[in-house]
Amino acid sequence: MIDEILPAAVMSAESFGDEPDAWLFPEERAALGEVGEARRREYTTVRHCARRALGGLGLPPAPLVAGERGAPRWPEGVVGSMTHCAGYRAAATAHRSDVRTLGIDAEPHAPLPDGVLEYIALPEEASDVARLTRHTPEVHWDRLLFCAKEAVYKAWFPATHSWLGFDGAVISPAPDGTLHARVLTPAPPQQVPAPREFTGRWLARDGLVLACVVSPTVPPALD
Ligand SMILES: CC(C)(COP(=O)(O)OP(=O)(O)OC[C@H]1O[C@@H](n2cnc3c(N)ncnc32)[C@H](O)[C@@H]1OP(=O)(O)O)[C@@H](O)C(=O)NCCC(=O)NCCS
Image (cartoon, rainbow, N blue to C red; front, side, top):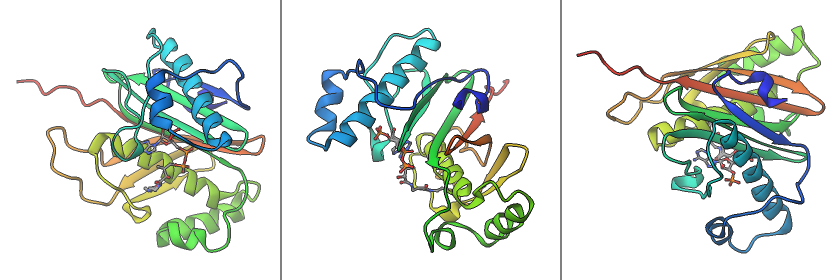
């Protein structure tokens, strides 16, 4: 399902349940530590998905432990993102030469709890949600907005190593399944300028809403 919204250069794998043959590298087991069964299962299954996605890039299985602020450390030359929610796990990977950074997120396709939209939405996003809800009421646009924001953060952080709050980017989803994100927060100074925009796609089906965003690789400057 997630492959339907990802660009061709991005390899992905997903699972609608936990996989009995999924396994962890010793360093992943150590990094996970003592956790409940539900967390152990989602962590293990999403890494199983990630290794399948790496295989799609022609790469061997590799340990995927959390680095700075929980962002997974991908093999050299690879970018990627992972997500899990009730009944769904997915991972997406690409060669850094094709994609600078990417983020994916999955959420149950249900309205956000009371008060959450007001917390996460900028005024223009809240009015978009109201307008889109009148236009296409079968989509929970509030949940989609949240999902897209999480995907943007997962793409932003590895590219900048900096926090991005819910008011840090304006997300504009469209009924045709596309979305656009414009970052408002000033980016920290860095050698390759931080992405200011992300393009993406979304999909709501079978009780889930999925979002992905990508930023293309910046071509090297010609001297
Ligand atoms: C980190 C965060 C995005 C995770 O999203 P979530 O919907 O709660 O959880 P998901 O299951 O979809 O994703 C969890 C996975 O995200 C990845 N992740 C965690 N921190 C990350 C980071 N800083 N950068 C990139 N990926 C990260 C991990 O792979 C994690 O899975 P793992 O712990 O098994 O490795 C969320 O908890 C958060 O902190 N959000 C606040 C920031 C934000 O959304 N800003 C909006 C910007 S417009």
